[in-house]
Length: 154
Image (cartoon, rainbow, N blue to C red):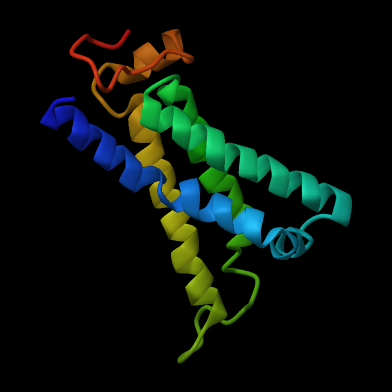
């Protein structure tokens, strides 16, 4: 493996390390707590399904991104996942203390909300960020970008 390939892999890992292994492992170790958090927006059975779906996304999509297999699709799925989780669990507008001086739960959630959307932008770079990649993604959404080879992606 060349230095360029190692650099690409390291950068991709920096992008996904929050999810795999950290968040996925947290969901496994603290499954009841994760379900409890999901119960804020859904009944028990649906909350369990949401956590299981999140766990599967947090394991499979980062592996696809790291391996370069269907990484464009995986980047798009992860971007959507980040945006949906921001909208469902980082609702900074709900506490009503965003504009208050001092400690503010709303401002804390606001920064988490923005971080989720920033991560989504990073994941979308994998799918459509390189010039010419947007049309390539639309033509072949399940293709790989071939990050570790010298050939041009489709």
